[in-house]
Length: 560
Image 1 (cartoon, helix red, strand yellow):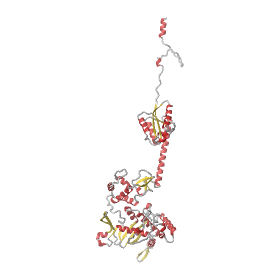
Image 2 (cartoon, helix red, strand yellow):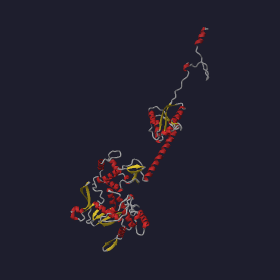
Image 3 (cartoon, helix red, strand yellow):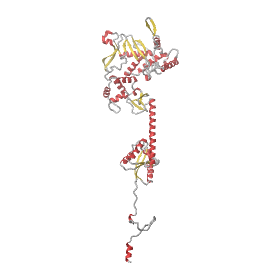
Image 4 (tube, helix red, strand yellow):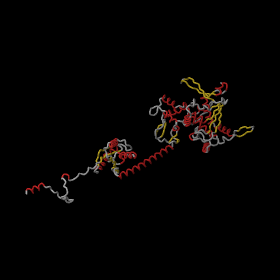
């Protein structure tokens, strides 16, 4: 009995059959403490909660605040078994147009440090509003194995369907970017074609005011100084030295470099034009440099640098004045004298024959440049207001004949389309344009409108270039309309003037006396009108006062 009891005591217990089935005797029995195996621990995603509102006012609103977004995101994260909140990042009062936000930059740094597995936002636009930035952020997240979830839009890049939606959204974002870029290009082209500046850094001498370019004093005068100095010196280094000497610097307060000066000298924007992608359009901004001066500078820049510089570019008659007595060219001479203001140069036009052969070679000798300029300008202005003189001049030009071997032969009809009104309008346009300019610009305009000047002690002859200036409606209104009836054609009045103007415009459209745009030289052969007047100086500029519109007020004429 004892042995049987002992065997019963130390015999191992046979476990009862489980619910799943019976346990057989031949099966090995496992220890009680190792009867089951624990499952593998599941991965937990560390979620970065990001909230943002655009303005401080929105941050104070209850339902749109960052706190409301945070509560919604946390409730979503807590509903997912494998998600846990790592940290909350917030940017109240920051725009979504860029990524310059302190909270978001902290997310970027933590992603690079490997501390975040997923970024969760309330909406996609809380992350960024820029498609370009969104595309770059998605690429950045993929490089660091980080997913992105939008709670309200069910946007999850950790799933295949989420990645498909992401690619579709990026495709539409790319389409929207290209469409917006095309709209911007079309808008820029339309602004350029209408003559408006299309944006960007304004050129030196201008400043933007209400999306338009206006003068930027005194920089606009500095641009004029640069062009005038180049005509005189033909040297960009000389311009740099002059600007440094006068303490004229760029907008940044630094001395000008040769490339910036070269850019100014070759930029057509200073002539009132807009340049866009190699094409030039007429603009509406004010003009700093006349087209004549600009073209003259371009011509000088194309010439060899060793070419001699112009010593007297401001004298308008230099190179076009001839001696009426001997036919020689009258060259420029000057004498320096001291006065109250210091040393001053007095310029003269001297007959070249006198310079070569002596004082007795020609009776013309020389004439003061200032006196000759006033004489020519005053007489041309007087003639432009003398309707009877212009009528007689046109009649004589249209009926002139030549004597050949004792026979009287009519000359070709060079002036058959010339009318007194045409000539009067062109003379007024020439005088009006020259009155607005001075210095080198005025000299270039004068040489454009006058081909040759023949000077003698008794008379002065001027070959006026018809069609060298565009005639607008204001050019023919030098006299106040209420007081200008004496300049109208006989028997026509104002209606006749309009009729003549329409006929003249029709002839211009047919290519006769038609100037190029912006007052350029006529495309067809020029017609030279010889105008001769006595060498008498008039005080017409003193008797007529010039107003801001360049109209002449009528007063009594007087001559010396």
